[in-house]
Image 1 (spheres, rainbow, N blue to C red):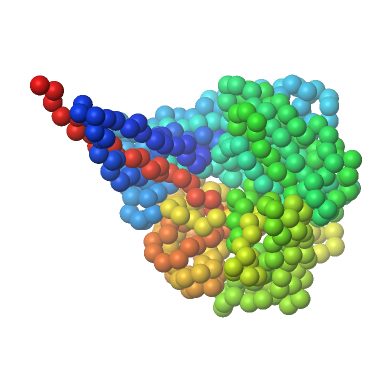
Image 2: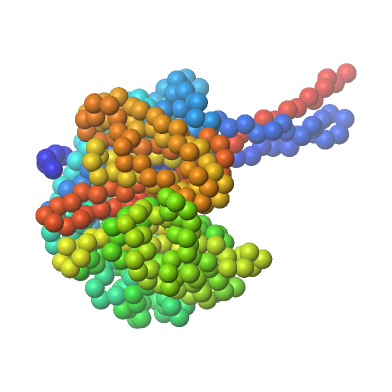
Length: 517
């Protein structure tokens, strides 16, 4: 990758513009008429955070920023003219870079490192529909936080892709930069001796945030220290090594729960295995009685399911694989019992058998639904030539979702309809350096996974974005696998499609106060 100065920060998913309205009373004391039905309008501002991409001096990171056309209303027919602002004006985002005092991009070793210099004027998307990229190399790249307004806000996304060709963090690490929030779940983390897992907490706001981290193993809550009241200074990032938080280190399967007491943060887990490689663990979908984990590569040599039941009841789960030809029960792994407050795991040998699939978890007894969170640890390759990635459970795409940084060769899109048949519109954007966007309407049969590898912009130059918009039918869950082999290592990463929340419900109030005599 060509060495350049980091020059990109972009916004992602939406912040609600209006969430409520005041009740009014008429002059005669009677109640005012109720508000009319809500309508959906494009968001006017979006924000995101990107964690420190790597601790390696040989890391090469590519940021891809993209805003899809249209407003993401779920109809597949939106337009991009002036969406998101009354004046139709799009303001460029800004980069706000800082590493918290006492924390370093190399992972919070306790030694204070030099604060990276702020990026120069950032490259920004100037119009929906075309990705913009920027490169950054080495271990001194800071965490990034940014915002966008106007026509660029609805659906704004950024993909952070890092290649580390050698060393303990070797691998292809991919992450969709996230929306700041107050509650995150990360199954499939670890405090084992051969793993170095850091949870990165990034505060984009002008006031400090305070976070708590809970670790749950197979026997329940791990004895922890220094996990409550973790300060995250304003506009700063704090990396926390999980194995230093507990005296019960050496646990292979751990579920991490991050919450904030005050403020909000962006959170992601960087996982590095001494033998298998490294990647990011993105937040899993909120606890639910059913879960879909889409996009398991066809040539996966190892798949491990990790699940956690946060409620007061145990969960008995039915395990199924959704393939191109239908939904099947994996041999020898048809169920999983998850005790309340404990992490459970199961190896799924020979799961895919040469075909891309998605894992479906449902209650063994439909009358006893119990919420769980779940994720997969997936390995490709054998011996010394292995690579690891993680697939969190993901919610269905309700209106629109995008994953940026796709390549002409190496990108695989998986669409899973666990229930009824569904129709979706899939758009491959223009390339970052040229090309013509293309769209296709795809039908996903009930209980199957549809795989696309040939939807590429015409005359593509650079990377492109893939956008999924449901049109009709049942729910669809989606994931993108990016495979970039290097020196015999089958490097890959999997990103699930998270609804971009490009629109927000706005109530339409109606009031007739009358006229006083």
